[in-house]
Image (cartoon, rainbow, N blue to C red; front, side, top):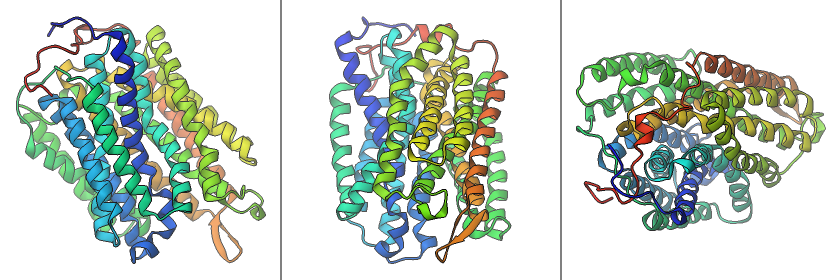
Length: 487
């Protein structure tokens, strides 16, 4: 496919990037929106602590399933169209949560909010399709980093609202913000003309959904149910069986949801493996550091911060990620995205090493969290470039959706592992059992070790990977090209 219209005017490039990056940040913000409410959810929803955890789990599962499915639908029927569908589901989910007073509607609303995670891979693919080539790298790096940016900025915002207003205000606010986002997408994001051929793979989507739900449910709830319980082991076994059958089906179908032959290419496969590991390392810090901030000073290692203050101390990490992402794109342009991914993995490991030395003060915590965020920004910005340098132009949204899924698997495993570490390594304080200093140090060591594993995986990616645009990149379609659907 070749461009059939002149390049998009530079004046429109800025708004397109701003709206798409903002959309990614809003989608990521939904992941941390209820974190400040977790301890209060049983009382607010008139349920048990175990059942209340479904408010978080539902979002995780829906996001994991939605990213590859919306990616493939975007390749088939229009990426902007699917982005608007995701925004619509986000508005609907926010309204359901805003009106909820019990567990069931809250879980339904949070699942609808979780589908918005499909916005990030769709936005990355739209950028490749409609932006001038010289702006693609830095814009995709910013969009890819929006997951970490939204998560970091969401904590202090949600904490401040939860502490000073009725908790429903969080969801009324997210509904309004999402509605504004939808209008901005309509006004400023042009149709992406690239379309894949074929049909949507409904059996493949159903099989992947069942397999992923079983896998992530076992990982996320295994700590509550017991890792040796029948529920956990049964779900893990079911996930293995279903995903193996799904893989066999995808290899035989004409228009698969995920082209496993392309996914098995060394560059794509190893980038996705690295994404799982980097996702683990990124999420470990965001789980452990807020707990350390909020523990009482009397423990000897806690930093005694309030919920709102803890969120504000974590906010600079998100801002640093946003500021650094363009530099990662410049490194990718000069040396290749493989170098950026390797650099990011090493910087992340260094950040965890600094955590062992600096965890005794709030400023020290901010410092090592920012270093880790620098590493994640470099790594997350490089992943889409590596993926898109190896897949056909018509499969970019689906391939990016699968890469986002890999990150989600990493964050889910990270949540489970860090939860086990901090739950098993405890001390008694003031009549309560809390994570010990050794538990926090062990968590940081694991995070650093995992980041080093990511670096080793990256070294196995062939060549400079993605430094020279191939035909798929050179033929980037532009706004104004013919579109079968007009959306």
